[in-house]
Length: 120
Image (cartoon, rainbow, N blue to C red; front, side):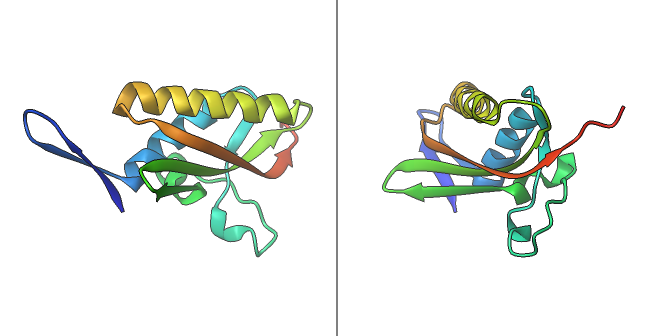
């Protein structure tokens, strides 16, 4: 699926993968986030961190009746307040997508897939 925007100069198509990549890049810059986890590994019980080029594998972008919903699967750092980290990610992703793509995001759902202890 993709989003079609009609402007005075023509038509712009934004794919869900682009939205997911921008959202993933924004999320990993937030304090307390160790990385993104693959959404398909939930059933395996393994939370493997994704590299930068695979952020879209840890995000689901859904469109329902002109509303955009984003599900993000993340790994947080041990010792951080998970609710604050999740709230920060939600607000940053909404703001970044609004500013960079001009999209109104209805919801950003956070799924914590693991907690990692920082290696010193």
